[in-house]
Image (tube, rainbow, N blue to C red; front, side, top):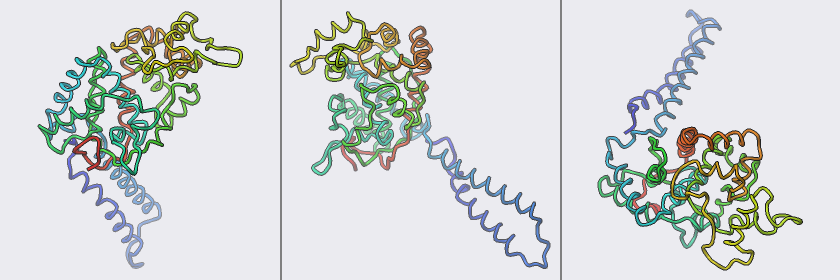
Length: 359
């Protein structure tokens, strides 16, 4: 339930009409009456314009996300979702990384509107079937969470909110921080595989990453903090082949990689690799949410080019060092950036009954 009263909306919508009425009276008053001075007119116009802006601002607040959005309509939602995520983790330790990545990939395309969950149809190839998303998995967890929530609060909680809450639970249940997730997202009806080209690639340099994040209103600190999500998970050989084979015309291996670490990656991922799911963990504790990722990054043991790029700029390198030395500072920044990213506005219009198809 939104914390702001509904009558705020009616008040806001009346302001423009009131403004026009008063302005009309000023302009149409008979010459025989005492007309306001120009200064008085300007003052009135300023006040009325300010009221109009206030009305717009209040409308935006009403449409904003709220941490207590379901307090009245579905207070059981969060516990139901947490229970499903916890159960899935007992059966598959890769679930947390999958849910966190899924949420990230959702928010970076069309905002956080659960478009990544939609299935392709005969006429349309959806986001989940775009090249960067082929390796996404654990969609069944969101399906199960949706069923659990529908059982207690039918047609109330959006798939987009369920995904945001599941991503938070994935972090918390892996030993990371918890936070109040702002809620009230609506589910989108459009999902296009071609738009997944907009996702930041593991081969990106710092300039490309900065551009990708800034387009979505995210800062360089957000970039460094959210990259810490790589403390969970696994990377397939194809996502870092560029660093260990034919890196440059005169260098086979990326020189920024520690030689012993590069050698271990080459053993797992030879040039003519034929093992379908071969790859490497993103850090040495892939199922625990900690700051080990940053420590390894400073040691030349990062997996992706995009990870390594974080130490190529003085400002981002300083942040990497800060997070490597203080897990508390990392977690504080990560929570702030996650809330910011998960609040990227989407074009959602509905609460889906099935997260895989539009209503």
